[in-house]
Length: 179
Image (cartoon, rainbow, N blue to C red):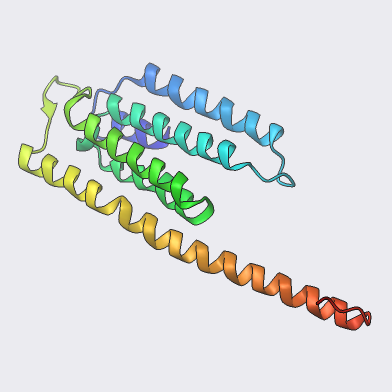
């Protein structure tokens, strides 16, 4: 809301505030509902986490659609669900999130409401820049996802090793051992 408000009021853009506010309001309601439905003491299932990330991608893509598509510098936020998925979810789920992010980025190159200034002029970057930005998102989307996935695998492996070590230590301390 802050970014949309600043762009509309302080930068002279004529943004569809009502529709943008509706999208943000729906997302807020979904997030507040999720807080109560899924307390911190409960881990999301793989499917629930995937649906949450997919919702985030859809919401962000729709906001980008309303505000110039890839002409909007916030398009980089399409990478965020990819990184979160890669750090926390299995590779097969992350591949789907990567592909969805790439699909949304691709759709936004051809289908979006143009950014307009208050005086009616259209803000547009040169087509070569928009193509380059799209290409950079395509190239960058799998990269942070892969890096985060590798870090996540390493962290999960370390966690399992620590848990096994604690289990062995506890068993040895009680005189019980497992074979």
